Length: 352
Image 1 (cartoon, rainbow, N blue to C red):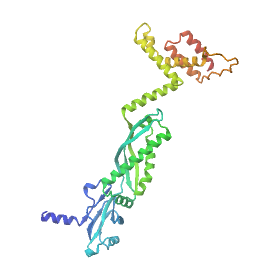
Image 2 (image 1 turned 60 degrees about the vertical axis):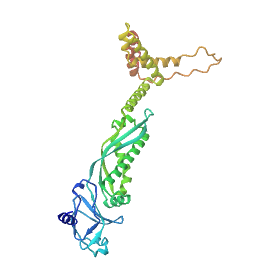
Image 3 (image 1 turned 60 degrees about the horizontal axis):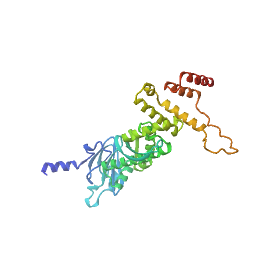
Image 4 (image 1 turned 135 degrees about the vertical axis):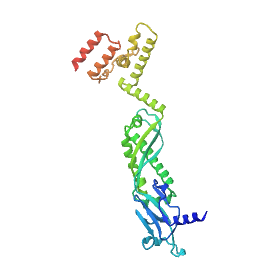
C-alpha cells in the first residue's frame, strides 16, 4: 500500500456511514469495531445507528451527523477501553433502515395436499413476494446477533424461510378446515383470504424481532400441469355423477354414450342421429335404468306367504322445469318421438 493509500484509509476511519453499495439493505454492519473519538458518524433520514457490545445495545443515534465524543453522546463512555487512554472505544455499529422494503421474493414446496373434492393428494408449490418494515431496530439487532446472522444476506435468507414455513402451514390448514377445492385455490379464488391468514400467522414469529410484514403480492399457489389435468377430469366426473343421480347411473350413461358413438363410427343411415345424442341421452337412459331397477322384482325368488308391505319408491325430487328440460334433450337426441314428447310435456305443464 502506498503512502497516499495509507492517508486515504486513515481519513476514512474518521468518518462512519452506510456504504453506498449497501443503501438498499435492511441491515448494514460497519466493518470496523475500533472507533476513534471525535469520529464523524452520518445517519441517513430513513435509518438509525445502533451501538452493540457483548450482545447488548448500548445506545442509538437517529438521522443526522454526529461527532462521537463522550461529551456529546454520554453512552459512548460505557464503550471506552481504558488502555487506550480514552482515545478509542470498541463497539459493533449497525445501520438499520426503517422504511418499507418491497419486492422480497420467496417460494418453495408446500408438499402433498389432499384435494377435498376428489380426495387426491397433490404436490403443491407457493411463490410470491412480500414487503417488510423494521418497527423496533433494537429487537432486530439483538435477535440477529444472538442467532449469528449479523449481515443483511443472512437476515433476509432467514426471514424468507420463516415466511415460507408459515405460508405452507396456513395453506394446508385452510384446505382442511375450509374444504376449498384445490383447483379454486390455484386459480386465485382465495388469494386474499390466504394472504390475510399468512400475515396474521407471521405476526407472532416476527414480533419478537421488531418486524412487521406489511403486505404480500404476486401470491400464487400452483400444481403441476399433469396434476391439474387429472383434477379437472375427476372434478368433471364428480359433477356429472351428481347430475345423473349417482355414480352408478353416471357410469351407465357413459356406457350408453360409448355404445352409441361406436355405432355412429360404424356407419349406416342412423349416423347423424346417433352423433346428435349428447350427454342428455346418457343421463336419460341412466335414469331409466335406475327407475327400472327400483321397480323390477326378481322372478326367481320364492314369494313369502305373507310378504311385507313394499317400500314406497323413492320420491322424484326433480322439479317440473328440470324434467321438461330432460325430455327436451331426449327428444333432440331422437329417443322420444314428437307424440311422446308432446304427451309428456302436456303432463308436466299441468304441474307448473
